[in-house]
Length: 51
Image (cartoon, rainbow, N blue to C red; front, top):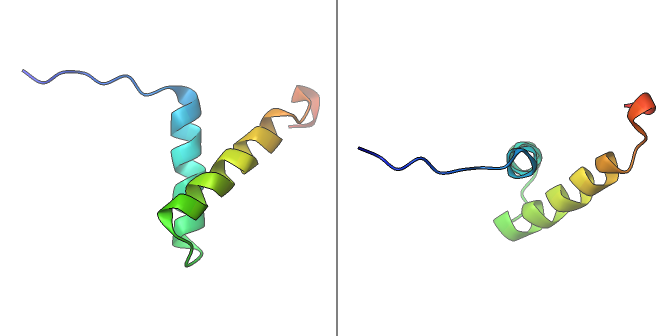
């Protein structure tokens, strides 16, 4: 039996953005993670009606 690991929706969103950044650039893992956090934070501050 395997243990289920909880992954939050926020973490899934970060991973999605980070994967896109890695695929389309030569940035390091650390740099893409930092940018992913910034991008997701910026998107979260856009009013819902404008998304």
